[in-house]
Image: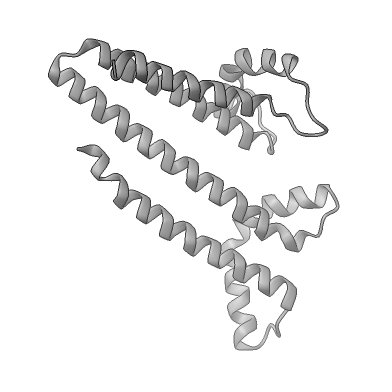
Length: 196
């Protein structure tokens, strides 16, 4: 029942993300074309820059650290926004799936399925924390913030995984493998508790 809402939500997220990506592509074009600031196109380009500045600035700062042309920052922001939209839709689907499944199993008196949905939901929250930590690793944060809490919660799993799986160059793939294992664990939970 609740999963019928998902296509509406996904359409809204898709159109919002498409509009945001279009703005960022316009900004990228204006970065390289550098139109006359006193003309109509220049004034429009200034408005686009003003609207997108708060989203593009962290990416520009990151690119500047690696001595990469900061005019490419909209491309990095597009990539991050697409990934965030994908994960946001995943969170919405998981929330609707767990809520609908839990309410249906409780209505039917199926305690085993209810336990399975609760475990599935908890693993989903942990996956979300690992993703937030991955995004948050680009920014400096103190241990008293929400990101500090996320770091403390995910350390018991990620630190041993980093010891087992060394980094490849500057890429730490241990978190990706942990995410794959957690996804596999979710499918096992569904098979044992819900679909059996």
